[in-house]
Image 1 (cartoon, rainbow, N blue to C red):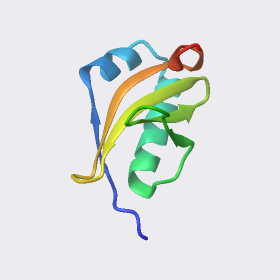
Image 2: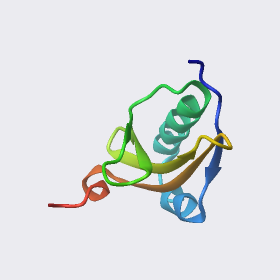
Image 3: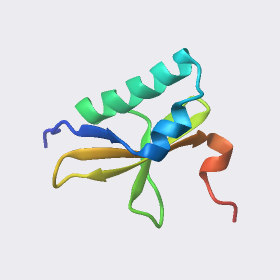
Image 4: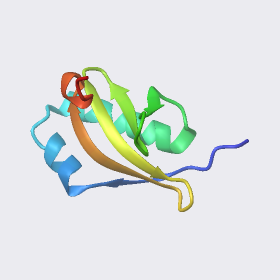
Length: 88
């Protein structure tokens, strides 16, 4: 099965999340998101009990939704690893 490239859309919340990051960190996040969208490769996992996905980028987690029907990846949130997962 071949990969169809996804269009990346950033939510207002995600844009706000990355606003204060240093350039190097922002560049790493943008690179990971665009690489996955273009090739389907990267450190990405489907979230349990949710229709979302996460892309791991060093100490941050990029929470996103993927609509394969219209080839869109929507970045919903960018947060620290420790804040990404609910405590049980």
